[in-house]
Length: 323
Image (cartoon, rainbow, N blue to C red; front, side, top):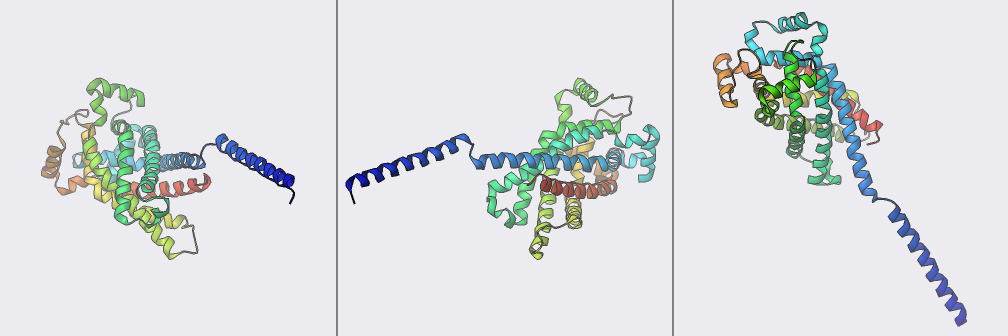
């Protein structure tokens, strides 16, 4: 081959390679790394899905939550049946009083549920990687769920305190969420918003851990037995959510009751400020073991549909958002 042709081909080849390298470099510098974009977008969509699921479920089940809190605080002291307490609430403030504190509850549950679901998925990936999350054992899911629940509760806890006060007090005492926060701060300072935080954290860890672990274990068991069908369907999700929520509530309920009573100590007439241990002993002494489960019936009546609605809405929102 002629030497001039060889030099020409080499020159053309170098020019072509230079153009290719320049093109690749330009494309790479013009866009952020695709992995980062995907991960940030995925976290945001999980947050949105969790927030919508929490708002819908809590608003629908707000009357049962109101009745649960009333029974937790007054317990046997009210001297009434479950239906009697229901009638007392309606008589005092009308039918809409059953949704008293729901605005605060929605403000609370939106970030709480969003953070719980989003952090749960991120914790699983951090612990086991993207490829191994479906093969996690039950106790591994429980650990991830407990960590996620603890993070979510820590962020949203002051709103839970305000919700409890808004439910239990008469309409004339607080004009709204802001007024409730102002009065609590004036009376007791910042610590008013963290009353009952210790039993709350002790309770949310087994509750969230058990709930999420049982739910995913049941759902994955169904998927393994129905490999031809990748969509569990609404009824399967409802069943998984009902069982997992019941398990979580039964494990943690005594601590939830103590938390609620501590939140209102000193604010309601006739209530003394007692530390967690003394309050626990007082309830056992005066009301027996059953006293630790006051309000469990409306709580379960609320928890099962709330969990089912939450998980169904969450799964549907994930599909809608392309997760």
